[in-house]
Every structure is written in C-alpha cells, then in structure tokens.
Image 1 (cartoon, each protein chain N blue to C red):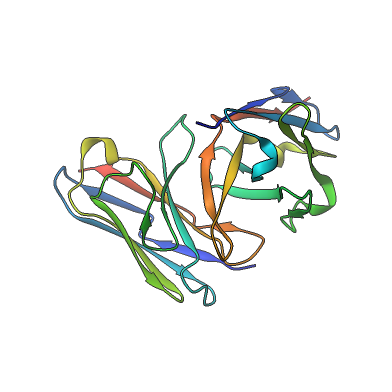
Image 2 (image 1 turned 180 degrees about the vertical axis):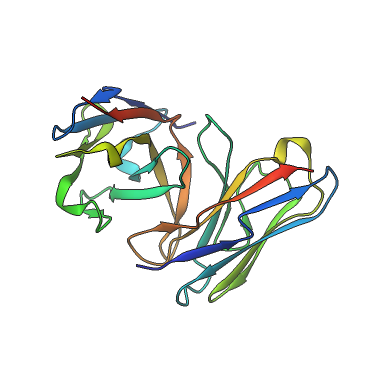
Length: 107
Length: 121
C-alpha cells in the first residue's frame, strides 16, 4: 500500500494568514492526489484533484501543487470557515489511502 | 444534483454482520463508480472499497476477507456488508461517488452525510 504522510499534524493560524500543508507519498504517484476538508459532524468536502485542479465551487484561495512524492495544499488567506481538518488522498492505485490529517486551528 | 444517503443499524453486536445501504438520488447509479469510507472515533479516514459501474470490486486488504460491496440498480442504491465485526469496526461510515477522469479516478467528489455504527453487546 502507498503511505501518505502529512505535516504538520496541526497548525495554529489567524484569519488572513497563509497556510501550507504538505503531503508525502511513500512512492511516486505522479499527480494522483486529492485533498479534502473535514469539519466535525459533516461529510468531507472535495477540494482539489489531480494535485492542482480546483473542484467546482471551491474558493480560489485554495490551491494545490506538487508531483511525484511531494504535494502541498495552500490556503492563501485563511477565512473563519476554513478552520477544519484537511486530508490528502492518493488515487494512483488501489487501495486508496489517506494522510493522517492536518488540523487547522484558530490561533 | 446527485445526493447520497446512508442507512442501516446504528448498533451491531460483536461477531455479527454490519449492513449499510447508500441511496442515490438525482442521478443514475449505473453511470458512476462508488466507494465506502469510514472514520473511527478520533481517527482519520479509511477507504474500505469500491464497486465500478460494470460491477467489479476492489477492497482494502485489511478488510477484504470480511467485506462485500454490491449494487441494486433497480433501487438505485449500493450496499456494504462487513462480517464478524469487532469494536474496531466502530466508526462513522460514508458512501461516496468516484470522480472519473480520462486516465483514471481522481477522488471522491460527492459524499453522503455519514452514519454512525457502534459495535457493542
């Protein structure tokens, strides 16, 4: 199985801050990465696919990058509604695997 | 737009079988492939498996021997069965649609709200 390792596990930030989350795959996966936002009691929300493609309806302050083994999710200017846990997921091969999550908390 | 709704017992006894259904509305189930995912308490997301629009399946190796995913096209729904459950199967279970691109599946673009399953006697 391909392991996905996210860092940091949590980050404290203020509204307006730029936040970057990193995800590393245990082997090369080209651009087969998706990112999700998860809030307590709610279903995950699909943010980005194929490493850098923004899903329809997702604000442009979210962006993704990377290829091979190293990927990033960046929130350019953090908004109140962005405080949540973020997960990367590899779609290169089955079984699909998720990172352990990065919790973005209010500073 | 497509909406998904999970249903099933919220409490299952150890060693028994967990059975959940995901009802698809707003679109045909035959047009897409579908996955099940779960999140144990205080833990991250775990992909369980999927069924394609042609009926083929693929499961996580950690659950493969106990898991079956099936589709009922007449009812526009798909199902999950996990046998011989233990407390470790306690989780919120989600169904989701798989987004297909030109070269493969990109991820999970539509999710149900999730249903909590507790394994306890």
